[in-house]
Image (cartoon, rainbow, N blue to C red; front, side):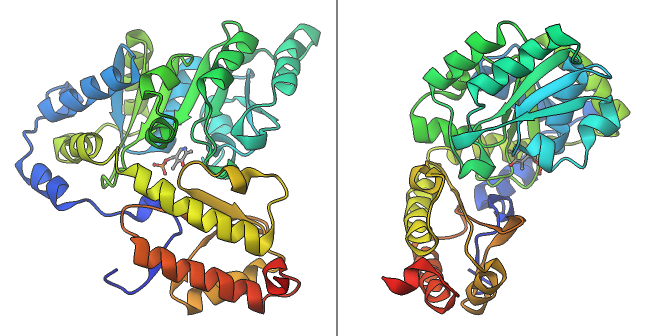
Length: 350
Ligand SMILES: *Cc1c(COP(=O)(O)O)cnc(C)c1O
């Protein structure tokens, strides 16, 4: 890497590829506020098609895509039932409450999957003087659960428990789930009413996400996007990069997954894997809880490897396009170094 660092903090650090830069320079554009940007329209149509939905809306960020879904499916005072570690709960600046007056009802999400018993209880509580449930939200792949994926069986069970309650799918990394499972994004999204997906994570576009769903809800989301200040003008320059991302950058995610498996195995060996989520780690996320996370972060940094801290005691390594096999070797050496020098680290005794 140019700066000599192996940056595994997130797949959001990826830079647009040369093909994206060319497409951006040459993009045909118009005023998207008037629905006149042909490149944005092409991207919206393409994503709707890939996700098997009627329509899609281009928005600046994944957070806005999720928040628009809450806005069109929710109403003040109602509940959103979701996994306790999901992005919507943890990393959207309190948007559900601040924008829409929604109450979040977190349930356990071992291996990224909403516990079916807890989910059924949360839904049934409505009949016992709990607030009504406006929607259920799930995340696929589930970042905080070591990039866990929902397979078609999990999704069918989800649909059966929800029985008509709308489902929003936070598919920021749905493309990773598609590549890891071999099941198409449309099939993975079929149980959901609305789907959010990001172009700027592992797919390397500089910015942009989409919300897909039924045409009437997407039209409503367009109005809310305007109200939130998310309308943009000649934004075909970004949509052009997104089209390249979808065309050229999806299949290669398998590389990131292969590299993450090596890191996950090493992290489990060094620091343990009490939940078994590391052993599964099917996509590009490696989360672990070493005895002394500050010391591990420091050792990694001394070796030129950047990790992120995503919760008290929880460290994360994320593989992506801009880290190659050589970078992974360095990260593996640095992890071993951290384990050997750390207090009570399991790797030290082996
Ligand atoms: C990154 C991410 C988002 C939000 O995307 P931003 O573009 O950063 O707002 C939503 N959900 C998940 C699971 C994410 O990882």
